[in-house]
Amino acid sequence: MGKKKTDRIIFENVTVLDAGAKGVSVAKAPEGQVIFIPNVVPGDVVDVQTFKKRKSYFEGKAIKFHSFSENRIEPVCEHFGACGGCKWQNMKYEQQLFYKNNEVFNNLKRIGKIDLPDFEPILGSEKQLFYRNKMEFGFSDTRWLTESQIQSSEENLSKKNALGFHVPKMWDKILDIEKCWLQEDPSNDIRNSIKEFADKNGMTFFNARNHEGLLRTLMIRTASTGEIMVLIQFFEDDKANRELMMDFIHEKFPQITSLQYVINSKANDTLYDQDIKLYKGRDYILEEMEGLKFSINAKSFYQTNSDQAYELYKITREFAGLTGNEVVYDLYTGTGTIAQFVSKKAKKVIGVEAVPEAIADAKENAKRNEITNCEFYVGDMKNVFNDDFIAKHGKPDVIITDPPRDGMHKDVVEMLLKTGAPKIVYVSCNSATQARDLALMDEMYKVTRVRPVDMFPQTHHVENVVLLELR
Image 1 (cartoon, rainbow, N blue to C red):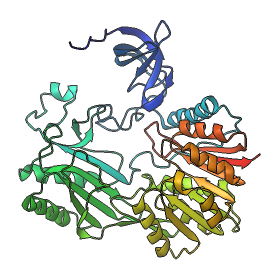
Image 2: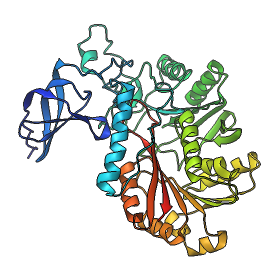
Image 3: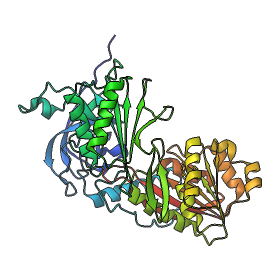
Image 4: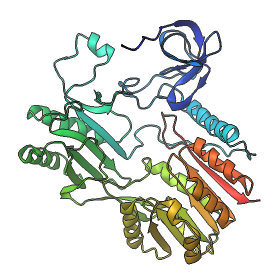
């Protein structure tokens, strides 16, 4: 028996009230249910057609605009609304910052239920476009067509190949991208040239359902130093076509610092368990910050907005208030960027991270930067960060913690409380899980400073830095 189709309801003259989670906006139905609507701006007045109904909310789309919000602007990208990225590109940047700041405040207040100091002004990004240093694109032999493309008399519907982004909620659909406004040149030229060359030479694009095709994904990484990394995932092991493509890229773009590939025939695109092959150049690019150099390889985690990463780290260091005499623990250290960034103002920095490759990078970077007061250890945080670890390395004066989106394990929070460090600087990319963790520490620690940082303009994502001090 098939699923019962959702009744489609049209609500007329609905005023969009707020910006909600995951980049969609919020309105109210006449009976009070919330309506989630993409591609609209608070202040727009629209007719909404729903396509999903739940007990307390609807999901729908705007089918007619009666009036536009004063905070609406024209998106610069021709792919806006179709690729799923940059969902706030139709909203003035100052309003984006307003709603990001509100999200952090509401999460800390409603979820954390803690006393908060006045927020310091959210730090906006000087670059609102072309700010990302890493982009990943997918190849597909069945490109996704938008309604306007289908209706256009100029669109060549026979062109089936695509190199671009996954369509939201459709794991096997790729929207072909002509120009992306997220990564500086030559990113667009590299991507478009690769696609054109592949088409010209009859190379097959990946089919996610049938698991066949030569070309699977493309990753482009850039650095503030001007260095560039390009990595292609091939699904099939076709040496002749692989070398044809890689030689073309090398000759067309001699400025590429690191040209690599991987043959990945498994079910997913993840690189972390793959054997990456260097084709030309070296297997890393260099990022620089205050004279420190960090090597970034294909598997490395590095903040994807280099300029704002520098601002984020400066705020973190300021909140830590180091004098040169402190033992600092940097939990979830990644490749040790924050640890090394604060090291010149600390007595000793201890970094802990679960990913062995990241710790190897951290040690190599410290050696490159001639930093001798940083030590790095690998292991699951809840297992490594324990009484024995503290006894061996000394009681921390300051703890910096920058966990993944899920926040900290309860055992890690308990250990934080047990150490009784005078200061904890909590950097988070998810203020909801941050608020949960802050509530667990509230009896012992008081939040004394809060500053959100916008790392991802045109999206709803926001980082937040909190300083906790012993009560």
